[in-house]
Length: 155
Image (tube, rainbow, N blue to C red; front, side, top):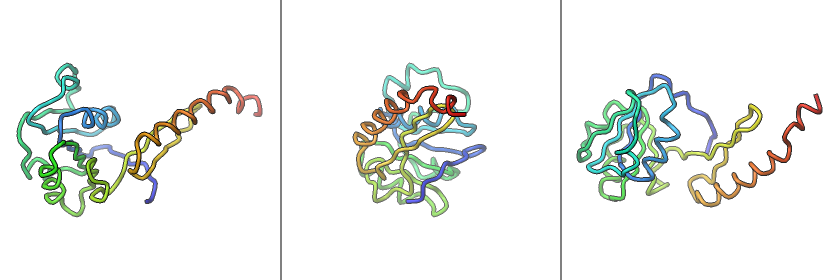
């Protein structure tokens, strides 16, 4: 894997799925300067109770290939293996896909981000274990807090 940060300005993101995993993915994306479509026949109450900004649209419908036709980046986050696999098959070669149910079908994995003193640390298990990633992120955050003011004192 090649670790990078993506500039999503003027990009179009499609999330297929309306559950808790889709919600978690949306939380990391919603502040980006991009458009986001979320396609799902049903949505978790987190979506239903949210006041989403204009650049984010929810579509209550069954997935169709045309839903991802204009996407630059696709996140597959349903609990239906057949739908997940169909989205992956419908994706074009130039579209980047994160298949949350099958890492072998993903082009990229999300990283846990820890920000401290103007520096961003990204932690990843290459899609293996979100629990392990979260564990080490908590350890890193605690360590960094113990350094509060350390850099300023040295400069």
